[in-house]
Image (tube, rainbow, N blue to C red; front, side, top):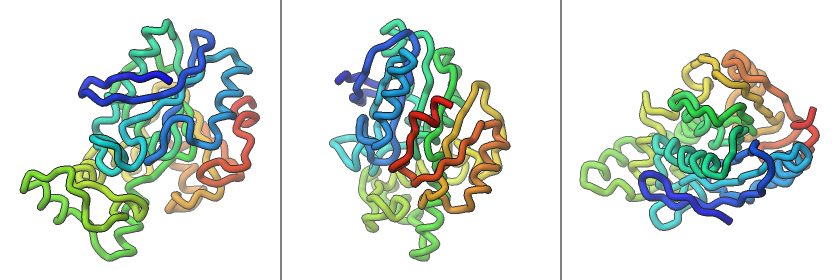
Length: 259
């Protein structure tokens, strides 16, 4: 296990299997953590077959809540600091090429990072179950008949940014969420809105190759599979549709990556 420290003082943990000067670096989705996702052995096998190194790393949204970090209180707009810390570490280890991989919310974090930062280490990208986090939030708020902007703004106004909202499933009907995190994730015009093209029709292409694996049975997709595929392809992403669920259970990701 290794640890890096971000520019704003967060300690992030990961596990690194050394290989060549090429590394596949993978980060998790909401409230997960390094080594936790079921398909990661397939990523490791793919790396070993190709002689690559493999890094599975935490971002500041690891776990639900852990001291001053976790999915309940993380700010999406801060996610580039996590990538910068890990990429700096890899560069210090002599790595010259990074394949950056993310799952679920991790795909949106990667998309935001590469749209706002030019890091020559990153040569290609893998999106695993690309996420529409705002869409899921809108679906949950429609179901319960309210948003949390008033409550979140109230807590911010009285100096309680990390106060958890009253609905313990305020984060898309799944997790608790703090006032500041809610506003940072879901306020119109904030970075998450423009990360991937699902909400705004943002079809700006990426400057490096991007491969996306889109499950056919993804309960986090709020529109049809075809709409997801079209949105990604319009952004220049190479899409492979996979007969599996959001977590790729029972799916041979190793073979899919190798073909």
